[in-house]
Image (cartoon, rainbow, N blue to C red; front, side, top):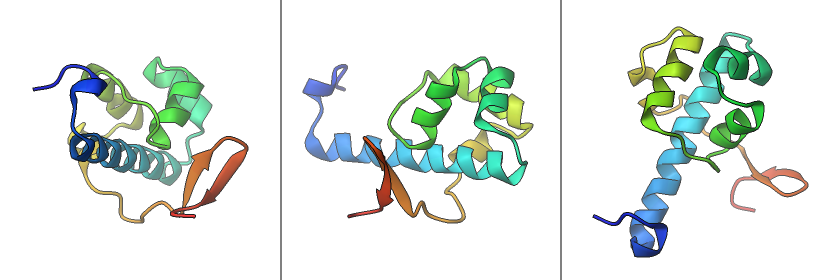
Length: 103
């Protein structure tokens, strides 16, 4: 089992990236469904707003203990964060804004 990004295979890195995107999209979906701002979720969960943004875009990962903090703030079981989002992301983040997925 690799412990550093340089020790993982390309396939493994792609799998992890997809998982980060999926969990992030699910967090965003649950947050928007409850009409909670990123700032409010950050305050409730003890994370920074920038971390919430990075998680939602699948650009950042977080210690699994923090998933419980996010789930508690959203008042859902932590397993709800691991479910596939019901609607796939249409945009991806990049420096300068966002662009359609795959562009």
